[in-house]
Image (tube, rainbow, N blue to C red):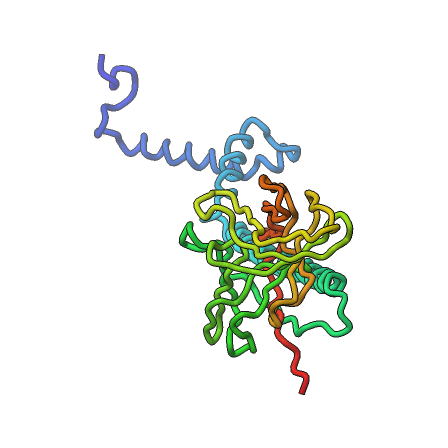
Length: 288
């Protein structure tokens, strides 16, 4: 049976009455929608829930909501300002710690040398703490001849001797550490009787992976006693550019197999390159 048999015209054959009825139906629907708020002030939840959810979802999309999009941009700008503020605070805190470390190192240097007039201590930042060659031990500093540095000057961290300026450039300097295989230094230490004895310090076993030092040429005179482990080894007064009394390391082993009073000492270096990013270069004070 065709749709026309049920009282409906076939598709494409709708008459004027059908079109008029359809217009009346749409008009009645529109009147109902406009009259609904008056007839039911409390609202019609069943009819409003689905459209309201759809409109709320659409309003939550930033591209469809200009106000939300502006808020997103404000939050992004706020995050950028917060990150910049955090960076500035971190720099200030680090500068504060660096200043405290610098003052502490200066006090340690003054206490170690026990001099009325300290050498000129020029602050230098460590640009590189490890030498590219595994056979060398060196530091690269951000100060050079333009800042008054001289070859052979001692480099210290507090009261601990690190090494000497070996290669000098206008705005940088290469420091040969005391643990380098080519470094040589006269050092002094005290025996059990309090006698001061001196010897020559150098790296022990250049091929060893561990940075150990040894003291050779040490002579113990009669009645001087012996050298004990853990006593400090300090710089001697053999070089005018290296102040006496700087801590180099500590005796870790003593051996005198022949018993002739010329012991060999193994020394653990006192330097710690990880404790600070700054060092002091000690310059001779101009007496003129």
